[in-house]
Length: 306
Image 1: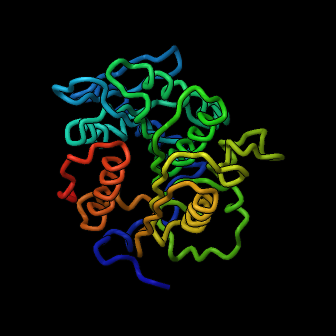
Image 2: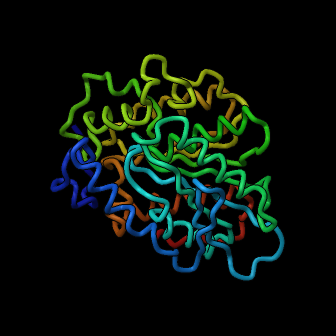
Image 3: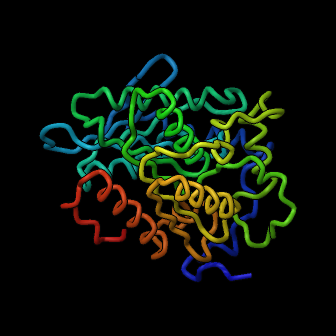
């Protein structure tokens, strides 16, 4: 077994499983606290009675700008849109993009398809903004948010109302069938374990566990052709590594321009936990580079890996 990247110094202290049936409630309440305050440098917009977005706009922008819809992670059961404040603020200030983080409702109280439909309403709102170029919108998500980003890209293709220019998936939670694996070495995992995965999927699928809809688990979706350019990033010590590599391979086989970025020795959510590490800064730089390149902001300097 390859060791964790030495730059990720917290790896040996972190638990293998953080989110469980017993911890989800307290963590959910804790992560919901920042969502009650308006974001510094941004605003909270009510899309409808159930959905809000936290929006950051570039200063002094002229004309319609490219945009990013960010979808937070948390195994479908925890987290809030405020988790994207720092990222969205930076995308607006440094890349000149309108960046919105969508507040979707959480499972198990709101199982599939409610969170996905909430995200679709956030995307529809973003595409309709006069300062947004609707032909240059990227959908970006982390972990369970990566699932929703992938599913939202597929749903947008199905409905034909919005055509995202890119999907950027950070260690996405794509395949419920990973819950059935018995060959996973728990010693190489941190934060998100097979038991966490089973809890998250049971919560999200609800009554759909008998026959899982492909939009709930994008790895089950058969036709991946015609999707926009895709960037997928994942650590080698992430439970989702194999399913993410497989999804990238299927996208490539379907003719979708796909970049797979594997970080050796990195665990799930490493860039959110050890934000100042060199490996995390480099990972975020690659994400910004991909966004700037694909959305046409080539003049933006992304040389600083912080």
